[in-house]
Length: 191
Ligand SMILES: [Fe+2]
Ligand SMILES: [Fe+2]
Image (tube, rainbow, N blue to C red; front, side, top):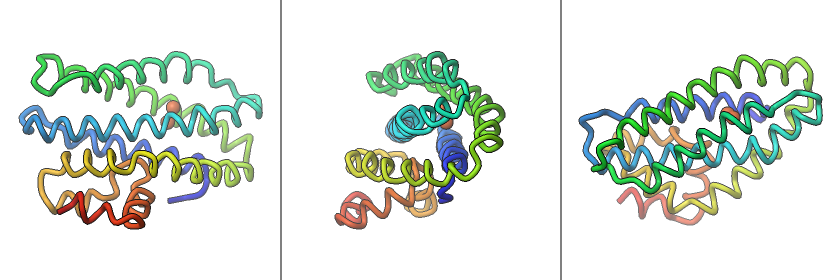
């Protein structure tokens, strides 16, 4: 993963949307719930990195992030919180997840076309330093949620091949696998 803050953010967006793309209306309830849990965790980690580190750095450089945080992140957090209380058997489970993904796609488009390009234009070399701070914080967040991330990822994986090839599809996934292989949980959850 790139160390530049903006590159990390683009990679996270791609990972979340790739994972969400695996959600099908006719998937089993267990697979749906695994994908939803995994997408929600990845979004929470991503939003924390932006809200704690990236957006404050942008604000300090004179770039306004208010709409992104107050409106768009607010909507995403509300839908994530709602999904976490729902069951795949609920009539509006599919629709709620689709609403979340529509919001995420809208926000990603805004973020990538406006905030990231502004940051790259105005902040230059500082993006490396901010990226390193984000990587350190990502490690902490992933480690504190390693069991949950691994079990939701295993649940989301319909078969072994997705588990192996899809290992890259989640909040900075190579960091997840590094964190897991360190404490041996990877083998336990994949067994
Ligand atoms: Fe983002
Ligand atoms: Fe964002």
